[in-house]
Length: 602
Image (cartoon, rainbow, N blue to C red; front, side):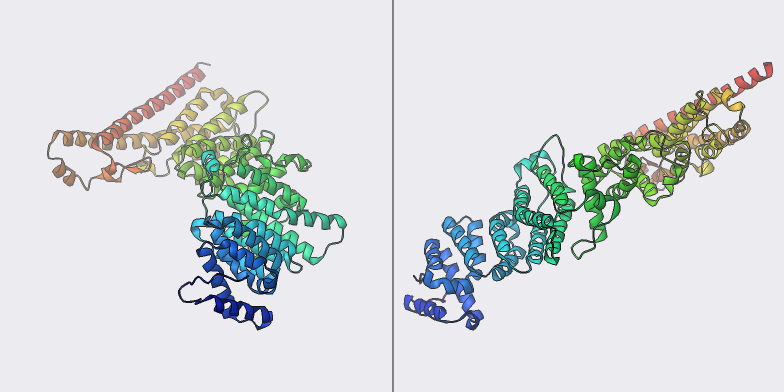
């Protein structure tokens, strides 16, 4: 049975010449074949496929007389055959059969070399189609290998995952259902692809006699699982109420790890993944962070996880992963970090976390990264979730730990919104401490003074931007008013005298700030109103280009970038805010006078 004589350019001239070449190949030992023979054989095959003669090519390959040729050079046909299948050409079924025949006939080593080259050179527009075509045949070839199976499997899995990393990960349920780029189908196919090798590892472990090759096979499967955790699972939206394709893949990964004798608790808590060329320490940490998320948030395989670890120990270990995820700028990472933070805190008893934990780097860094989410993240739903997690974290700290945490946040946050939230929590703690049986020195005794010193302060003095500091100042004034209303509980402590002194200094400076700011903002408002009356807006804007209004920022936006109407609203709002501050100051002074007069009468 010969190949067709259709020419591709000028490679083949007539049937006799083709038959002569084929006969020469039949009579030539494999070691005597030259590179040009391999190229010519590949060209013959490509010509067949281009002309739609896949059936004739299949007959040639299956002809017993050509068995030697196929065994020696058949591997070179793998690429054109796979491409024809991917393109769904006329000879689709014949090409599939030809690929299957090659996998059963050619040298597994040569086939592996050809298949790896094919994977590395995949057409970017046909990644998923090519991989789905290749995987069953690649599995067959690997199972036929006698030597270096583990290393070849590792190379194949790494190459496949590198190609899949070029595909976008579906982010919404709709995208995942549509699976436009085929990523979900590919990872599900990879699960089936690895199953025989997982079973082989399980059998070898069960036999209690393992070789270095068995250990290498287990290691390559571990690397595959860890890479899968990092990508696509760390990027994917997962929900245990919806068993999606990627959810099922995540479940397979979580089941595979214990199956190959990888303890989840050891991976997470005790020993980091061995360093390898395929994964640096940062990537390894991201993989384990996703592992922690799947285990503790999505509860995948949680039933088989040891119950001996205390909630505080789990939190302490997970802080490293929480910190890793929250420090990312990727939405899916931050979401998983917040969810892991919340779940790790839920089982911890309220008011139980000791201050000593804050000496750990991860216990310091994770709240700082959470603070950055609250202040810098542009996504409102992440900020709202972050605020809930922050409150949960505060609730779990004991009194001394709360005190230290509040001090740290007031010194480092540099954000009026976060500071106002901390001040509100300080008031809650003071209120709690005043209740019978809850008294403690951190929020009722002398230790309260350092906190109040940070709360009742204007670091920029008379130059303080009251508009941007409004949240903290209003909450601070409310705290001060509360303290003086509850003066009976404080007069019996050594806090009272110093509190009065701090209060006097703070209110005095705040009045100066309000006076300066009101004068400035009133002048700006008057100038703006005059501008609106004058028709030559451009001339007046140019005349005012160097005015201080350009340096005013509100919620990180420069006033010079706002329309005149919005500028007017901002300036008017500022004046109203100053009135509110003054009314609170007046009320605090009024309460103070009432208490002093009451003391004199008694």
